[in-house]
Length: 452
Image 1 (cartoon, rainbow, N blue to C red):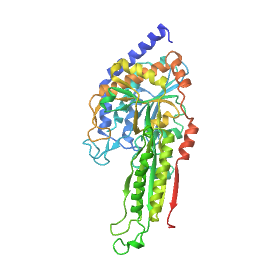
Image 2: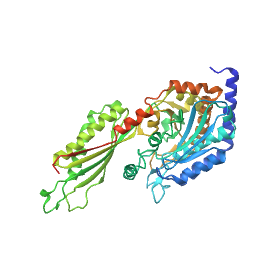
Image 3: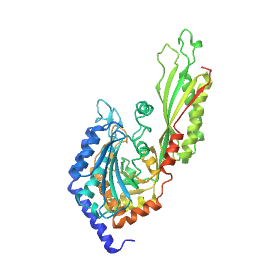
Image 4: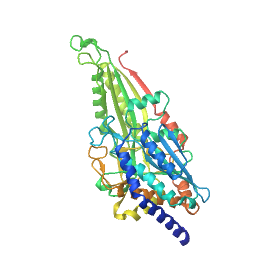
């Protein structure tokens, strides 16, 4: 336990950081609103990355840019000696929703998941810690990290980047893990927007689904659909049978595993008067645990192969390890909770629960002590056409303060708490174990059920 003098020192540091964030409140909100007006898709976030770089330069923070195309990473050394490195992060990318009134008319990009608020909160925390001259009292380093491509979109384009060797993984944090950009970080944190009233002003979930990606191609034999369909092999029929077989598996998924499988057909054939011979599908296979995902993925493969077998088609199944389930370290979560509730009140903070969505913060949580509390201030449906932030104090300013105060707790007074988190909130995997798992489940299986 800290003595009274140490506690007072920490309280003073926190007060200074929060006062600086309040002083720069309008600047921080303006950053969020600027990013909202200029949304960009994953691995293409050039303008947003430049904005982050400019803000770090104004703070006097040395930074590196172009990490996994667009990532920007600034580092400030604490002035009180060595200690852990704490990274405060934000995500650069938007989602696609062409129906949103603020969507980019060319790309359909819109920040209907609140990432514009994440970047602003990350920078806001930096304004508080650096602008109030708090970092000289910290033991260890502070990293401000804007990361690309959390949303798993434009799969064919990203997979082509992967085939060209430009990336290994579809999403930004797995790619940055593979590139060693978290090797010099011990603890990470960021916030994520929520528009759910039941989440109140802040919610710390216990767990989040992970998923595998499936890119599927059924190949048949073309023929005249009216004149000689008996000469063809209908790949669309194979796909439809595969979908039905997946549906037949749903009763085998345990409720506690929160399995979600949601395929789409992206190509149904070439012409209406030709028996479909090339049919493409995509799906995610989501689950609460790695074991649940692996089990469900095997059943999906079996179902797809059954569809091909029924009509004598060929099926190619490309599996890509997507996001892994999130685990939440208890000590780090408790430190953040104490800081956030000092701002919101205990009645506005919700502990626990599970979400069946997915995020690559789950991958990072497998190898580093990581938290991502969900913060309110938005209305509408996440990723929906009515999503927007209506209260930036809740969505950005309070999270900036809470992350700044948590960094102070972790790194002040010789970084006693930070060292304890590193020692006790140990993640499930090492970096090498994580990469071995991801590479194992990145694979292609082909089945020729008709001798094509």
